[in-house]
Amino acid sequence: MNKIELKGVSKTFGQVEASKNVSLTFEQGKIYGLLGRNGAGKSTLLNMITSRVFPDAGEILVEGESVIECDRAMGKIYLMGEANYYPEGMRIRKAFECAAMFYPNFDLANANMLAERFGLNTKKKFKELSTGMTTMARLSIALSTGAPYIFLDEPVLGLDAVHRDLFYRLLVEQFERHPACYVISTHLIEEVAGLIEEVYIISKGELLLHESTERLLARGYTVTGSSEAVDTFIEDHPCIGQDQLGGMKSAYIMEALEISQVPETLTVSKLNLQQLFVQLTKE
Amino acid sequence: MKINFEDERPIFLQIAEGIEDGILVGAYEEEGQVPSTTEISMTYKINPATALKGISRLVEEGILYKRRGLGMFVSTGAIAVVRAKRKAAFSKQYVAPLTREARRLGLTSGETVELIERSFRDE
Image (cartoon, rainbow over all chains, first blue to last red; front, side):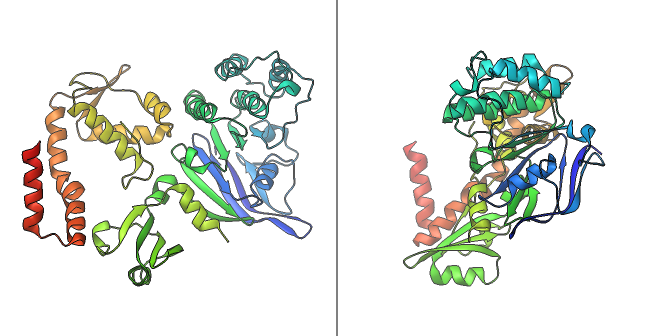
C-alpha cells in the first residue's frame, strides 16, 4: 500500500470547478509528471493532497489513511509549493533546522551537500536571495526531508539553464539514494520528459490522460504533406490537431504508426511530449 | 552516445544502441566494464528505470553480463553479436527510408543502386 490515492476528488471555488471527479494514484519508487496549463487545477490538487485545502467530494488516502486531520499521513508528504513561506529574515541554515523539526528523517548533511552543489551560502537570509537561489534553497530542503512522497511544484522557477541541468541530475541522484515518490509539476515539459516514468495531464480540472511516458510517446506522430493527402490520411486515423501552411498541412496523430504503412506522399515524424501536451490541451 | 527525444525509437533502445556503438568502436572492450545505470541516467537526465531497461535488453541478448557487486561487463564475442544484430536491422533501419525517399523523388531502382555504388567508390 505504498501509494497515495485520490478517489473522485472534486473542489469548487465560487463558480470555478478547480477539480472535477479526479482519481489518480502516486506510488513510491516512481517519478511522475503532473502537467497542466495555467489554471488547470494542478495546485488545487497538490493543496488538497497536503490538506491545505479540503475537497468538496471524494477522498484522498495516504497508504490507506485519509489525509484530513491526520498528522501521521501528513508527515509522509512534502510539498514544495509555488510560494515561499520562509520568513524573509530567516537564514537558510535555520530553515534546514526547522525542516528537521517537522520531518524526523530529515538529512541535514544531504541538505548541506545540495546547497553546496548549488553554490549557496547557507548563512544568507531569504531576503538576500534571488528567485533562483530561493528555489535552490527550497529544493535542498525538499530533497532531504526523507518523506516518502515529495511533490515539487515548479521546481525550476528562476533557475538558469545550468542550474536546471544540475537539478535534473541531482534529482536522479537523490531518487537513487531515496527511491520515494516524486511528483513534478512544471511548464518546462521537454526538460523533464526523460525523467518522468508516468504522466498525468490535467485540463480544466479534469484528468485528461494518464499513461507511461514511453507508451505515450510511442503513439504521437506528425504527418505532413499536401492538404488533400493529409485529409485523406486522417479519415482513418485519430487526429488531435492540425496546422495549415498554404497548401501544406500537418496533422497530429495519436496512434502508433508503422511508417512503411504511411503513403510516400506524406512525411512522418515523432511528436515530443511538449508537442503532444500542446495539441491535447490547447483551446 | 546521444539521446534524441524525438527519435522514432524509444529512449531505452537508444541507450542500448549507444552502448552497442561503444562496443563496435572499441570504447567498451570485451570483458571491460560499461557505465552503471546511475551514471547513464545522470548523464542523460533520464529515469533510472529507462536506463536499466536498456541495459537489461543487452543482458538478455548476451551482449552484457553482470558481475555481482562489480557492475556490468561486455561479454566475450559481443562485437560479433552486435554486428550480426545490426546487419539484420540494416534493411529496415537504413534501406527502407532510403527507398521511400527515392520513390518520392522518382528515382528508379537502377539509379538508386548506381548512387549507392558511387558512394561506396568515393569512400
